[in-house]
Image 1 (cartoon, protein in one colour):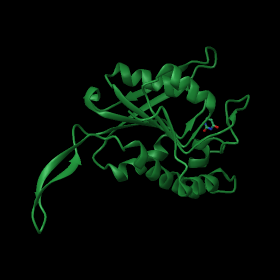
Image 2 (image 1 turned 45 degrees about the vertical axis):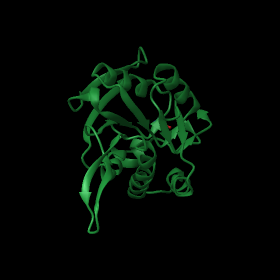
Image 3 (image 1 turned 60 degrees about the horizontal axis):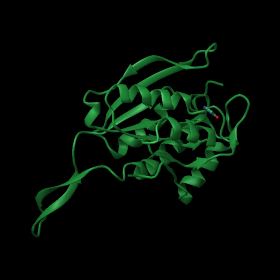
Image 4 (image 1 turned 90 degrees about the vertical axis):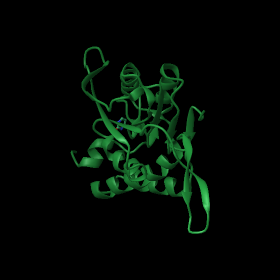
Length: 210
Ligand code: URA
């Protein structure tokens, strides 16, 4: 079982993250860097994918060679910023099935409300990787994982670019069985729920909406 929290401190990840944090990065650069970091983070989060062997023949002899086993991975994006991490994981695991969870925050109750939910069938026997670049309060991530568990998922991992200690604690309380892989745990949240020092609104920076 993977650690509850893995911070990938590889120099390439940290270098690219610094370029992304810089407010001078264009949307195009931000998207490209997010894609590149996702490839490196995905390498870490997929390290426990179940394996089997297949009998093959090399040009020299027969061998039982290692190969991925079991049902295809389900990759679930939390809309909208999660979409910026989809292609990176799909580049490494092109056969993964893809789902989407859309949640908004009810301004009165401050609770996450579902507006979209579409996931592949057979969630109960797939490894599920949930992607969302920013683990801030952890409320929407915890709610998305509640929905995935209701849909039958039992083997879930969470992949993000940046996390706040508050979000990590919330996830540990709500879903201690869900390992988190991230590039950094930042100082904390500000009064508006932004990760500090962070990188701002990931969706806006990705799509140029602000
Ligand atoms: N979502 C973001 O995009 N940025 C934050 O800092 C927190 C949540």
